[in-house]
Length: 395
Ligand code: NAI
Image 1 (cartoon, rainbow, N blue to C red):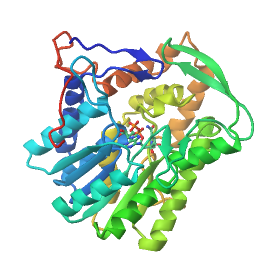
Image 2 (cartoon, rainbow, N blue to C red):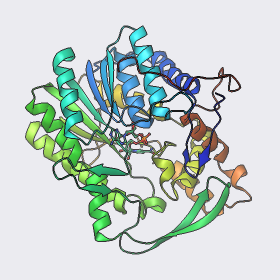
Image 3 (cartoon, helix red, strand yellow):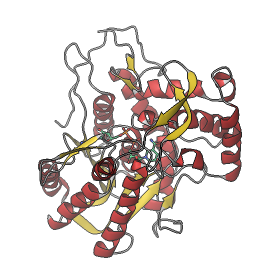
């Protein structure tokens, strides 16, 4: 079939297998162009490994350090006349490249929150790798079924306490309007923490530890975001921020139980991913941030961010080079530089529908959004008849 993008709001319902493969290859090439990691983990489990930060977290230790990787994700396989999701095709491309390079790579497509998935992964580690020495937790999900009770929790992206009004970008229409979001109820706050907090991260580490498949000195990392005060009401001080606070508390608890230096929270840069495009206000902020950082020459995507995370922190001889006052790794440091934030704040005041394309990198936002689904990559023939029904090598 001829595969074209079909955009519905903040999601694209199609994905191009060859475009996704090209995107993965570009990320692999970037990692190969960097110096090899000094002290890389050798057996890495990535939970949420198929897109965005998690995919980059699989590519970096594999191609920068020769690591064996197991990836867990929740994606839609392609069928004869229907495209699968981007993460499905990304994972096929990753496995093919890893196997070609002689690297172990196995993937599990299913619900990471379930006990069954944890058991399947543990069995595979035992059979194939013995133990893992690094666990990356990079899930972004709108819902979670609690494995203990069967209750389903849904996360929301809302402010807490009072309504929040802010400029907003309608990414479909390319219009700057404003949005008012009503505050979350107590139940919505609790539910968002259940889904996006650290409970499941701890359940994974507990299960791996109890099964004795965590190597001595193994590290685990999960990702958070802080950003500037103009997004705080919807992010840091909103429902998702409460979940991220819980994630940090989980890291502290794991460090108490398993030893300091076991669990890290890394605060990452705001980037176009499937998860971030669903957050109100954030796409406008990202369009302005990209404009400023590209002009300054210090813009990074997921792969550059995660390369730096491993090169400077996780894969060094002595562990992370620097932590903030709350014990977090900060690879959002370039985003949060005073001059970057001052420039974004100035543009934020000015931006409207008329000047959007002149003073923001909305064009870059749009092209990066399409690239997430494998569209707009060089060397891909988008007019060619393409088979969407692709199989994961390890399945
Ligand atoms: P993403 O949407 O690109 O990736 C989410 C991953 O989770 C995918 O691999 C998906 O298959 C997997 N997943 C979702 N539900 C699952 C389930 N039930 N079982 C198994 N796998 C499941 O998201 P992104 O943006 O890479 O986010 C990853 C983490 O990074 C999140 O914690 C997010 O809050 C954080 N982060 C994201 C930033 C951004 O700007 N995108 C900035 C800083 C942190």
